[in-house]
Amino acid sequence: MSYLEIRSVSKSHGAHCVLRDVNLSIEKGEFVAIVGYSGQGKTTLMSLIAGLLMPDSGEVLLEGRRITGPGPDRGIVFQNYSLLPWLTVAENIALAVDQVFPDWTPIQRRDHVDRHVAMVKLAHARDRLPKQLSGGMRQRVSVARTLAINPSVLLLDEPLSALDALTRGTLQDEIAQIWAENQKTVVLITNDVDEGLLLADRIIPLTLGPGANLGAPITVDLPRPRDRKALNHEPEFKRLRAHVTQQLLGYSQARRNTVSRKLILPEILPEDLELPRVHRPPRRPNEEKREVVVRG
Amino acid sequence: MNQRFSTFLGTAGYALVGFACFILFWMFLSTIAETLPSPTATWEVARPYVLEPFAKRGEQDQGILRLAGYSLSLVAQGYFLALAIGTPIGFCLGLSRTFTRIFDPIIQVLRPVSPLAWLPLGIALFYNAGKEALEYGALFTIAICAMWPTVLNTAVGVRAIPQDFLNVGRVLKLSRTKMLFKIMVPATLPYMFTGFRLSLGIAWLVIVAAEMLTGKTGVGAFLWNEYNNSNYGNIIFSILTIGVIGFVLDRLMSLVESRFKSIS
Image: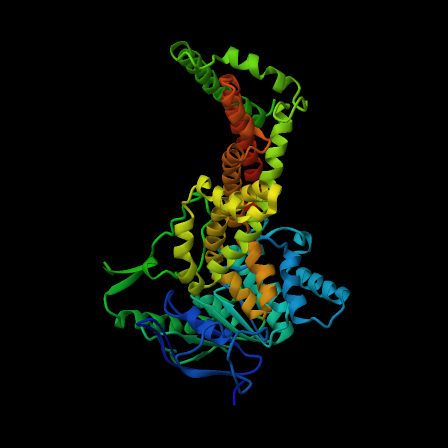
């Protein structure tokens, strides 16, 4: 019995089948990367493990127990950071710490928060609001918040996709280091093959939807710690990268020559034209329209 | 001289041009219409009220700021009543689809009703309160008319809370109360304050109508008395006073509002 197990899970959004019969077993302490194209259900898969969504059929098991809802044992780092904008860096982390460790003394909790702020090298920005931070710093706060609740599984949902290449590299090294120190079970979702090869023990490609599935896993047995510069010249790294890329390209060629694009209609609010953009899934039925475009 | 000060001067300059146009047009109109007092005639009659803004010479014959003070205190009471009732209703509308289905139609029906229509009902409702009936009636009217923008904006704000914020709460397994006060209320605050600002504008509109009908001391009652005294200059003076106070209230509220908006 594996530590985290996904058993023939299917999930649809309305009539659109996102995942079909997905199976995956992850061992304790393993670092698994799920690599795939955007919009193919990677985030849905992550939400299923996190318990934010329930599968239509099949089940997700953690240590043999069925997951029935979200919980702090599965810490998730969201793609868009999801920091609460009215709380400072320390307060954002403290909200999580206070909730998960109610038995600790206030001093213990405060120390714990400060330790995690320092771990992601943000001690100088402890009392800043998220809007005063760069994208990379925000994502580090988000990582710190998740690590501070000491989850048994760490779920990283394209945590670095919104960052520039340099910041991305730095944060990849930080994640590798944190993983090496804590030996947590990690599931990383990414669209970057190199990122997966740099960090993971195993890479699992996600096939194209609708009804996406997991492809054959590819074991990455490159020695650790992995140095990104040296890695580029490693024949094994090149071979693996070609292998994963080939597999992903194969899916894309097998597919129809059209894409279904999702358009989200703007929400019109009468009182103020300068409202901030809200990132959330559409809720009104008429808010979302689809159009089919032939790819050139 | 710094940049901001000079842009301020620029804005003020343009505004002054507007006021000058307005006064010229007023002077022009007063030469045609006999009953309309000219700006200078208006100033003449208004002078005792402006120069001694806190004087109290009689029940209705008081300095303008003292009169405005009476009006503002009544507005404040009715306004806070409106917020206290409107915000929770807005939250319920935003949170529950069923609640919206049940109560939204009745809200849409009651919302466009004029304060002048509510006032008699308000007074009748508190008929047994005797002397206080007028005041309670006015408060009732202010509260019921001013609460709608707060109700609707709060509801929109609750519905616009990003799912990610709620997911953060769900992953942490926050209790319902913590979810409400740690995540939903702060996330809705910018919308709520837009509602609060619009509500304040309406509350100030309603007070004048309410005072004219109930005869309670204040700027609106003063206006109506001066009309009955055929003292038209003071009608214009009252209108300007009401406008300036309304403008100041709106500016103050939008200052508070922009503070909350800049956080998120």
